[in-house]
Image (cartoon, rainbow, N blue to C red; front, side, top):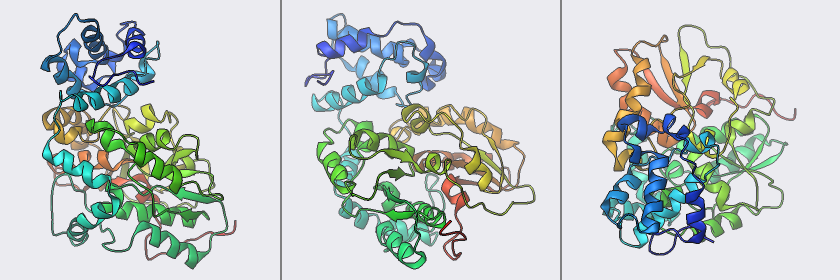
Length: 409
């Protein structure tokens, strides 16, 4: 039973969940919006109290609660900090969905168009083809668009089939979730993922009938993802594939719930941490890799360990970025819906880049939405040095012109 009814108010199950908050305040220390504003209502504890007071009639239904609901980044840092195990993310998603359904929150036309396209993968892919073309040839520059050279026409599914046929890996067959934004705009990261997996002797299957993971809909409150979930469960119900890998932590979190009971879902970096990896040559000189940890990997998927073997396999001197466990402010669509908040949240984290050792510097993470957020500040903090935002899988990539080194191990 859903904890929120069709009017956007908690039902009996929802009131029980809201009442489980013991108001200890541990969430305040990790909440980016509370740290930014110092406003109790802008914290998980405060929002839970507002929702509860609305449900009991102590507060009227008005824009006050709606505003503080919209202020939440959705980073989920409060969940591991909570001794009462309040499922804040579950409650937040339901509140967002029902606030939109009840007309309390009206997503912009741009958001609704994004939802329409995300539910129609082929149309989205065709619509984004010019953007892939512009990125590939460096025609379009935008502070949120990190540099890359995606394939314009060849899909990840076709590329995986091509490489598997060419190099004939004999190891475990794994499913790869391509994603909608990742596939349509940042396809070069998917291709790098395929190359790394094939190089390490994995057979890669990318179902062509997979759908959006539903993360966009969860962020925006734009409704039911049942049809998307059904399509993904069907797409990955492949007999000889026993695991689904993702290369975006936001997609991974959404997909974990979407296909629960079908196949286990794992982040590709966490998966590779348990494997005997082909290592890149040691990088000499002053190049340095700083690693930031996405919230939806650490707090959402509960991947607490550091992938140290993977970090070492890149060949780069590396260290965690200061405040690596703190939210960068990306929050899916949050960086576009609340750009001022998002910029202020990232400012605290990114200041270290002004005098951080290394040249070039690679700011590395495992979520394309976080990469967009980080890319928005690198020019302002570079100070004449080269600072590049990369996905960790790209640091392991043998390159499209390099033959994989190891098979049939």
